[in-house]
Length: 89
Image (cartoon, rainbow, N blue to C red; front, side):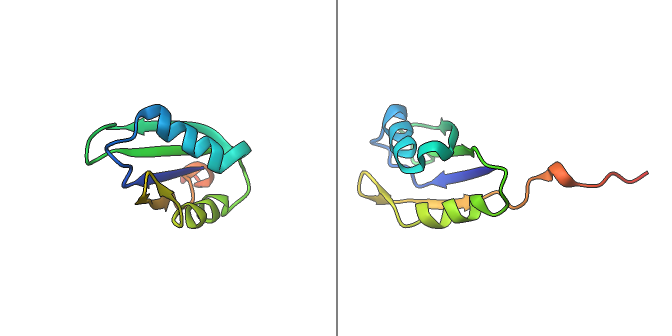
């Protein structure tokens, strides 16, 4: 399950972003990838360590209330990953 976090402040380093999300997500943080560090388009992809449905939505709602370096985060969860799509013959 993945969550994308937008509005990451330009002033934050990749390590700042990683540390913040590791602290906020705890054991749910399976992987954290930060893109475009130091630019207005900086964002992060958070891979969550959970197979439980709707965890990404719950995490996204919770992170939506958080601030990183004084900036409100914008968060979106990937709706239902494509793993359970039936194949048509």
